[in-house]
Length: 222
Length: 113
Image 1 (tube, rainbow over the protein chains, first blue to last red):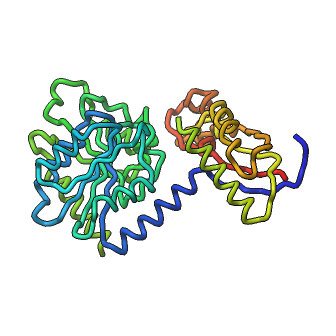
Image 2: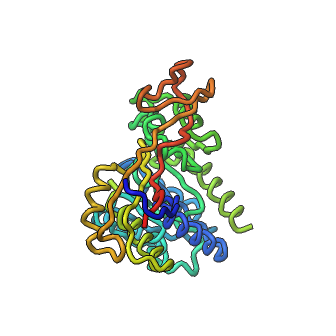
Image 3: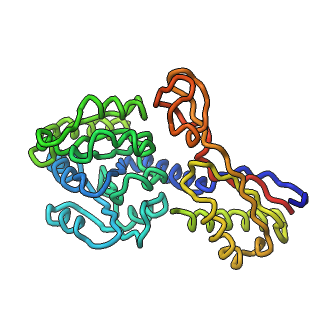
């Protein structure tokens, strides 16, 4: 390597997105808007869980949803049919959302009268964890059929999440899923992570989830 | 997997830096990419070569990539070791839990004028 004049830069390529995310969070704080980034692999039950949750809190808070998928409006239609203000984001093949896309989505959603917005991220355990969306809190769903070892295999997702929702409790008898192990593995990655077991289908545990939302929204708006 | 947006973002940043500091042309760019970063150096390099054709100040630049080792610190005995070499198992005490202390970075280290 020829030595020319050297200028030290030492800047992460992710810094732009990190700054965008911080800026968005500051704006959300001013507007008293709680944004939750909900992640998981495809089929864990994000949409079903959201429907069950909204049912519990809809009389106390106005909820908006941003659905993110590669294609189709399947989830947005489900939400709209349930009477929830929703927009569908198409990522154009991108495997994750970043802060800028989230900001654009919020503008499209028109959040003036909303208390809480949930971003249902692209179904993917790898990429979404790498990009700060500007959300106030991150939650990830792991469903029983997926197995209790996922926190070991996909560490970053569990490191960046504030809440781990274990879904599909109703099928626990049919799988070798160890409840104690999943808690142990998740806490290895993130000692502070909250863990709630639910069945979005039967409603078990959804009250506890609603309480977690109430507590965190209230703390954010304090 | 995210090489393209990452390359474009780096080039945009450097073109902007050059504009702000009256730099006409950047001769060399040194990147640091961690062994366990979400970016594969080979693909970063490939996209870089295409992307600089449309840049303002980087068209003649040469790219160098330093690989930063993926180092973990054992949760049990605090020993530091290379994650890839030891497959995530501490060579001192054989514990399987650790914190990553380097190897995830994708940084623009320096530019040469």
